[in-house]
Length: 384
Image (cartoon, rainbow, N blue to C red; front, side, top):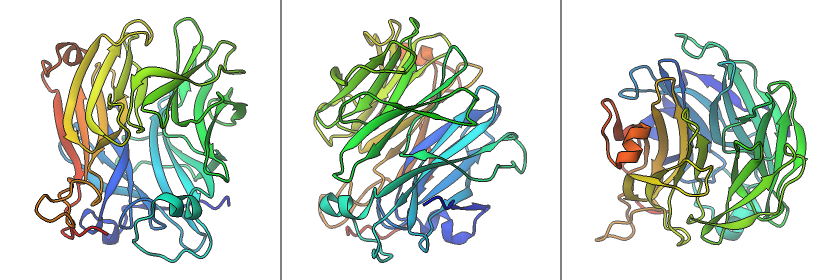
């Protein structure tokens, strides 16, 4: 169903922070002096037919935020929700905002109920569609955005990789009727005007990421359900891939981030725990041998329920890492009353440098940890 979501600039009070019951799955990007972030919310939990994306920005390095600046709204009449927004600054300085529109099963009534397990498979992920719009003046007082544009079937939750030959590579995934996740890749030879669909690595795959290695090969890393990330490689420019194989990188089946820094080292932001569902600690690691080993580790958040990191870098070598902390009432049950929640419901950003990571602590002036972008203050803490 190729109907675009509703784009709301400077949205009304119904989308204000005090009316949110949960929020999570953030993204981040830096455009000159402006820091952007996007995440999704709406309804009581996720997934919900009321899920919609929020975009915010800061002009003082993350101290204060315009929240919300924009909303990518769901469409109850057309039958889809909006989730997984992703910000990306391309090699020409254009800011992209991508999001997924997920058609839900017919007959679902607007509600706040918690949908999990068989209901999730029955009611959601029926038809995943990736959309985007772009902004060529992201630091203007009133940025101008292009019209929403349908990109492809399936979704991505990562940045597009600009390859050494100028092509763009993006790893995507989709879901079969039997609720099995599978990967594909897309190549653009015209800077995003068109995308050519390619087969991806064989194997269960969710929220994959890719980097081009110094030898010209492509490294594909993906979330799995066995307590470790899986990997695959392409040695022919993304035409064919090896099958996915288990790595020795622990991960409790949650989103991670893999990218390259200005000094050519690789950065991995991950929860390095092999116990499924145990999303405790957010750790930033560096590799100077193309991911064979990770020599430096820096824990930027020790709390439970931290997840879904995303990454941006600026011209001065600063690294911005955004993530969510205890995104909804299903987390951090009250010890005295297990029917209530103490969840933080935060969107959090850390600003660090390579020097901080190597030292394992903040040593750079201006670096910070656990800076709150947005925190839900909705006072109903009853579990659904």
